[in-house]
Image (cartoon, rainbow, N blue to C red; front, side, top):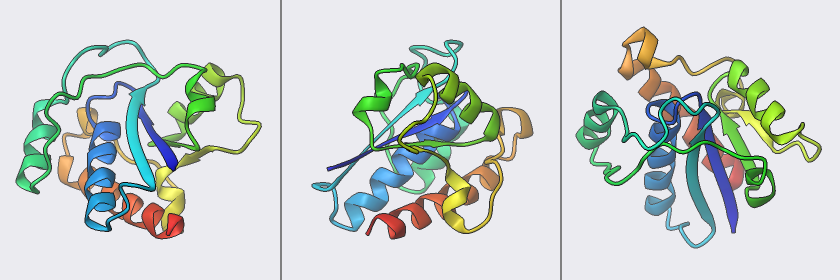
Length: 149
């Protein structure tokens, strides 16, 4: 079983979007027995809060349900629990490395690195462009899934 943890700052926009998009792709590929997916935050700002309403709405529009998901903060112990820790941007990648005390097993990656291009998934909390984030997350998750196959 490959265990993936998606990470962003608050765990209410980008990382839960990636979690549920990837979960949907994994189920449609009939790989739920081989890949598990979760998400977390590097900050404690949104702990216990549900997925941000515009993200919930966007997921629902695409037939994806995220009911029950609440924000949680990643811990150093997550490094041992997950095979891949996939981050949305370089600032949070640095935070992940700080939380985990580094990345000795090279488990930490930016989502868009899997697409063949580098860069950050823009935070729609600030940009308000949820569709652009959706496109980046879908492209990144599809490329990650192909890599794992």
